[in-house]
Image (cartoon, rainbow, N blue to C red; front, side):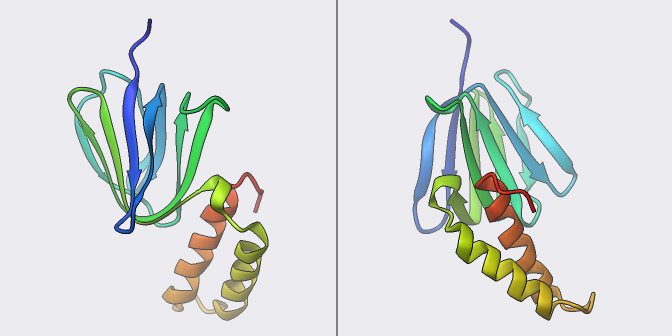
Length: 135
């Protein structure tokens, strides 16, 4: 039997998911990282509007979540904690609402200086990507 990671995805409001997986893939400010059992301990800052994937995390084979801000912590003992400021599991994403939020943010964010609109667009894109909708 192969070793597994224990993975938890949490936000200040609640624990979204916890369970075992074979690999965690996350986008950090330094780039994308993949973590498998036996990985070196890591503390990484998650990229804005990131999607976290836990491969082998369910009967379906994958858990996906849109995360906005926060950290990924990998500790000895094969534990991975995704500590997100805001997080949403793929199956909880309201796709039509996310599409509308993306349209609104893009229409407001014509200027590169509009950081708020850009951040809202990034959040909407990650929600859609987590839900498996191409953007």
